[in-house]
Image 1 (cartoon, helix red, strand yellow):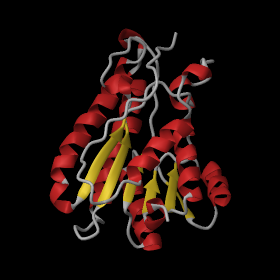
Image 2 (cartoon, rainbow, N blue to C red; image 1 turned 90 degrees about the horizontal axis):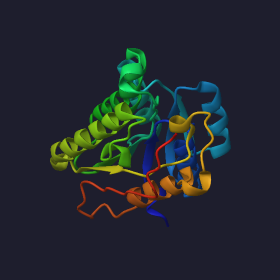
Image 3 (tube, one colour; image 1 turned 90 degrees about the vertical axis):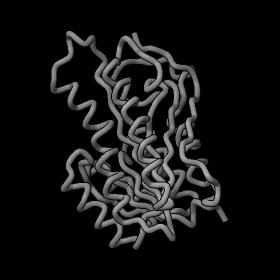
Length: 237
């Protein structure tokens, strides 16, 4: 039996490229999961596709009241959440002097604020006996400057630093913290409607495989951070 089938998951950004690939793999492995996204229509369709072990909760992860309510609903439905997976991410490629403040704020809200709020309220339902795991989507962009997306790079670097400190804080709570840092991936969240050379990029399924690998590691393994840089880092033009 897969270890994934023995755990309960809360996955945000479930209707996106990586999120969708991930929840399909988790459902196929027999995991019980809450799938969450801001798009209610897409989320309902996704939950029907995934089957009876998937419970949809529509929520905006940048809204603390929505996150609080979503986590409470998840716990009410599943009893306990073993694994939180923070997936949402987005970018607005632009030069610093051409970017408007709203886009700057949106990048940090979606990438960082959502991860912070979900991790905060996930921790409130954990206990040391059962423990838990937080996995957040970062990117190799969090370690490598990109002239086309410096604010996105800064947001991913923030995820790295928050995750590192969080891992130290949650050690006594028996909650491990990991980040996944893929290279360029063919997702709409980064590339939008621009055509990209998909053969040179990771697919969402590749990243989902790595997330499932980390989530499936034995709970007795003493890891706190797991960096996984996959594929090439290619800059959009």
